[in-house]
Figure 1 (tube, rainbow, N blue to C red):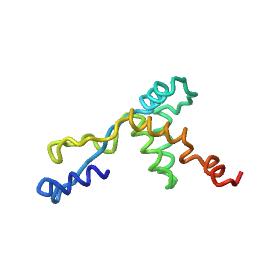
Figure 2 (cartoon, rainbow, N blue to C red):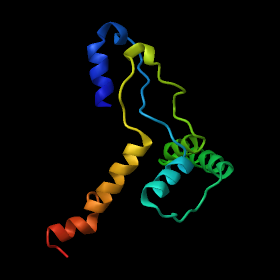
Figure 3 (cartoon, helix red, strand yellow):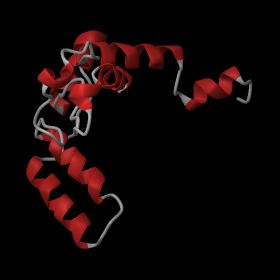
Length: 129
């Protein structure tokens, strides 16, 4: 997001009073899993919720005014391979060097290996376990 904010600030004429639709990349859950498997060299365990079931769950959650309804909607959208918006118009802010699926997966693998975001590793570092 920071790169998009900087680009908007550097292009005040283009971004003034404009709704800026931005994203770095989109990927389906299958593409994300394939990238993790490629980078780790292992096949990961899988479980699936069909798109039809996600649609049913989404409808059910909205009918009962569930606080997780939006989460189910986002999961359905991502499973369909989309985002909330259909495009990023590069003609407004120009080409922005953003993260890729490959770089994000690599960063997440590195964090897990280093114990970042891993509660038990944090406890070991603090000598609590």
